[in-house]
Image 1 (cartoon, one colour):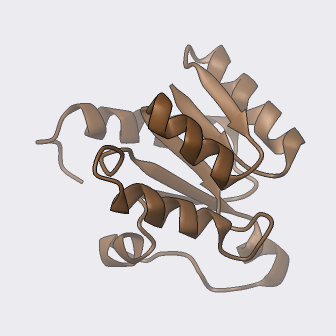
Image 2 (spheres, rainbow, N blue to C red):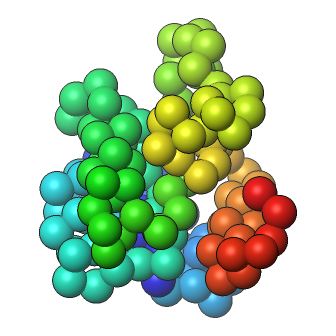
Image 3 (cartoon, rainbow, N blue to C red):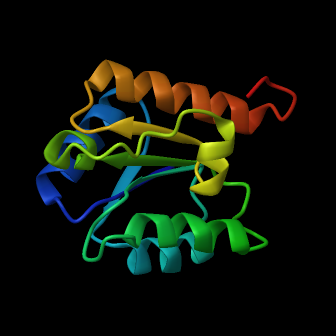
Length: 135
């Protein structure tokens, strides 16, 4: 199960369709609170979340909450954002330490092609199922 967390309904639905067409089950959530509540009841295999939703750090707070939660800290988090392109901000993580500081497993800029999204989803799920896999 993959959770998509984004306040952009169209983005969520398009990517849900991409994931489902590749054989994944995917559910959209409009914000981090809803996703976190559902994750506590039904933990997903992966969470894809926008960095900025209602507030500037909604996605980052979600990833931090997951890392601080004993039963959810193993779930890989893929952060996505359009801020790089929209505002020209240099927030792209450059290495594993940057990702760790964001409490994320991976990072993609929006817009992302379906093939690139699926490539990253496959990689993260494979790593999550094989703890010995190189990171």
